[in-house]
Image (cartoon, rainbow, N blue to C red; front, top):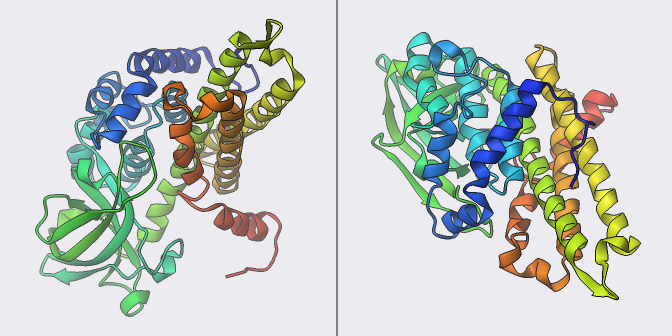
Length: 390
């Protein structure tokens, strides 16, 4: 598949992309699937990504990062996915948690966590979704009540990714201070070590083929010191929003990377595969046109993701672009993967061709993080000015 100039890229970004692709390609998709099916972390790859400075490329230099931008991290995430290793933890630990800590953590908290997140020696999970709340953060009931100088955390989260491989969880909870009562108290953010007493979790069986697994997590009167609070008590909603645009942008980057991987596999196969009179199947419009249409959708999604990252890095309002980028990338990725499988015929379903095992991951990205319906709600209200539907 030929290089495209549609998405603008500096020489530095192009070099970053090439370096990530070279590193991840040494492991390849087979490594990714082997780790996923064995329920094992891709430890070797993660450590190399961290040691090379790729995981912390966007974090402050004084805390072990590269001093770059979210746009740089998006290149890393997309390139790793395009090399066959779409790692969900890159969205969670460096993008969401790293960004929130860099913007709102105390100097002590930054020093404690950011260097490890940047070099890959530490990971942090993110817990916001609850069984009875789903996408509605207003219904969160996990509560942190004041206990001396610290807190006691109680509640349940689910679909929390990577808890078993994380050193801590960034938890969104109701706090005991500020206006409101009970479930309507303001939100706060807490860093909870995964070895804290009273913290337990159970895996959720899912069809996803990925190294990161999903969990229901219980906080049973978990004791926390005052250092666990991020920023100001009761200001968690604003703080968590600073991580949601990076979440959507890097999730779009995973989708776009999966699409590039699938299209590269499909075009290589369609160029080599001959069935009728020695003519490659890619010469037939029934094969070529659907792949070309899928490519157009991916190009548009990549351009939208690049624009969203550009707005975020400029300090502008990136919410609209980030949501649209995530929506477009998830849809374009699934179409591209589906067409790549179709181009392979029966071989598309054979695991040795490395496509079918990505289906549920690509499909999941239409639902999480943030479902396509919630994106449509956002666009209807914020972009079109329609009345609120919820």
